[in-house]
Picture 1 (cartoon, rainbow over the protein chains, first blue to last red):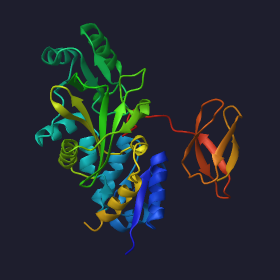
Picture 2: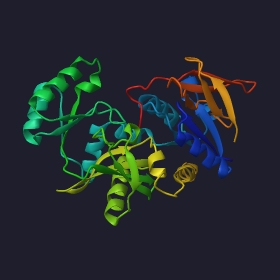
Picture 3: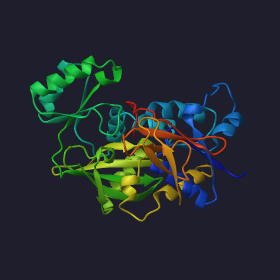
Picture 4: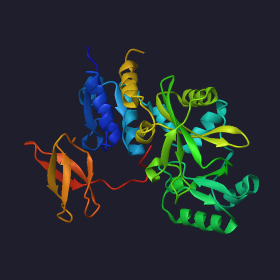
Length: 289
Length: 60
């Protein structure tokens, strides 16, 4: 049976075009599925689901919850999805990611959780100022805040309390990591480190997200970096992942995030490695494993 | 590769779209900055509809 990869998306970014081209170059059939246009009968069987979505599926939804729920349906019907539901669940929530990595012995920044303003101040007694407050679910650095002192912390928590979103009442507070003004993104596909890049924050922002204008530069893959990245990827369940690390002056490499719907345009600008090709070959190979 | 010209539904500015554009791709009007999603209709005509606004769970 010839395989047909389902590329499930909700927005065609540069990455999706590269993935489609990589598949065409390899003469691998791809079914482009716009998740926004679909409705799925939860009682349908594997054949019906495969007819619409293909098998295996490369989940590329830009909306985290849309992708996660669709993956749950596809997997329960027997379709192999990259990344899996379990991986997406762990990577899509920073608190779950930190717990998973820490349990597996991957070095992570010192992090505390709290559920109220009082709890945040209690955490800050331990962590000290400045600290970083991150939403547990969220990307591109949205709503990340540096807690510089008691007054700004109070204002930020008050504002978050006013936002009618239950997830924003989970406070994930991280100790400020003394590091160079950059982080390292390592792309892992299966059990291979494909490429790594430094990400520098733009002049007018402290966050390094490429979506915020951060710039990528080549980063050598040292044995230490490779070991940490592979261990982190394995800890969350493996697949197509981007492991983000910080270089702590005190503790060495610390993993602060593992991304499960990787945007690799910044990475691609630093390398000749065919990232999209590696991903497509991995997904095509999933059916054989 | 050729360019196809389309009109911005917002400001009537001229938007150039590659002729190998994929359904669902996003183009930005160089004049007013609005983002549009490309919809390729049955006869191959290109239609531009306002792009979905960034959601709080968007991103990697």
